[in-house]
Every structure is written in C-alpha cells, then in structure tokens.
Length: 195
Ligand code: GTP
Ligand code: MG
Image 1 (cartoon, helix red, strand yellow):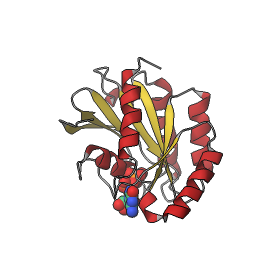
Image 2 (cartoon, rainbow, N blue to C red):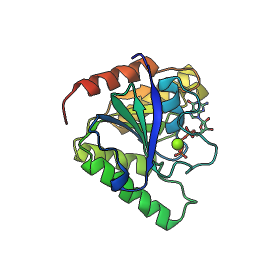
Image 3 (tube, rainbow, N blue to C red):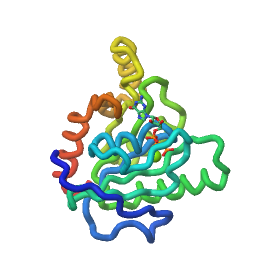
Image 4 (cartoon, rainbow, N blue to C red):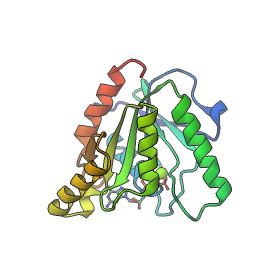
C-alpha cells in the first residue's frame, strides 16, 4: 500500500476519547516491549511516529494514527510488565478489553509475539480471548532479525503449534522482513465489511 499520509491523532485513556468518525481500524496488541510501536513505524516507513523505547510499559494509552485519511492504526498498551502497579495493570485490562470487545470499527487485530521466546501465559490468554470473541486476527512474530534462519524456522514452527488456529507472519522492524505479507493482510481486512 502506498502511504500518502500518516499522522498521530490522539491518545485515549477511556472510551470517551475514542475517535468517532467511523473509519475502520487495525489494532496492534502484545506484551510490553515486544515491538508494537516499532512495527507500526516500520509498516508506515515513518521513524518516529509511534514512540518506541527501551523502557517497557511506555505506551500506557490507546494511540490512534490516521493513515491515508481512510483508516486508523491503533497502538494498544503493552501487557505483562511486572513492574507497573496493580492499579495500572487492571487499568490496562479494562481499557484494552473494552476496546476489543466493543469496537465496531475494528477490522483486524495483529497480535505480536517475540519470535525468540515461547509465548507467555498472557500471550496465550489474549489469543484465546480473540478466538472466543471470533475476532479477525493474525500473529506477527517480531524481532526476527535477532535469530539465525535456522533458529527462526524452528521458532516459527513452535509458534504455529502454540497458536494452531492463527496465521503467523515473521516480522523484523529492522530489516523490513514480513512487511509486504502483513500489508497484504491489512489490505484484505480493510476491504471487508464489519466483522
Ligand atoms: P511498549 O510500548 O512499552 O508496550 O513497547 P512496544 O511493544 O511498543 O515496543 P517498542 O516498539 O518500543 O520496542 C521495544 C524495544 O525493542 C526497542 O528497543 C526497539 O528498538 C526494539 N525492537 C522492536 N522491534 C524490533 C525488531 O524487529 N528488531 C530488533 N532488533 N529490535 C526491535
Ligand atoms: Mg509502544
């Protein structure tokens, strides 16, 4: 897809802040530090659009980015970061779950998992949740550049076994691996009517 414009629109801390223009949305979900913001920047070819950081748990709000004035990328806060307070963790749950459960504009959820590691309990839980609510979703296995080809193939097989009902795409925000495949999925999802 040719990106003609990409802009940060707003950070939402509750439902009243969500966008109201009804444009379709693609959501990015995954544990803290898995590479959500980096993947968004890499897909868009815009380096600093979504803020990335070495400090896990940085993105604490739901961030909306308007693309080509026709759809949104939605960066959800990362989960599973042990050092944030209990209150913050339960706020995450409420915010993300409310968004995922209620958002009519949602066309595709992209669940990020780290290609180097076995899925965490929370990764598995989120996937169960997406399946239970019959959400159109795929998995991006991030940071693929950090593995040898051999190791990557092996880990991808393991990821596919852990999520047997989900399509898995290896991704690297550093090399751009997986970018075309992921855009293809996004374009397909945007063509669909409500799910
Ligand atoms: P939160 O907003 O805290 O939930 O994190 P996030 O999921 O948005 O992760 P972010 O994109 O900020 O990336 C976290 C760290 O991983 C940063 O230091 C990135 O540079 C690094 N990183 C992200 N994607 C990749 C990748 O594909 N390859 C490599 N080598 N590093 C990556
Ligand atoms: Mg982030």
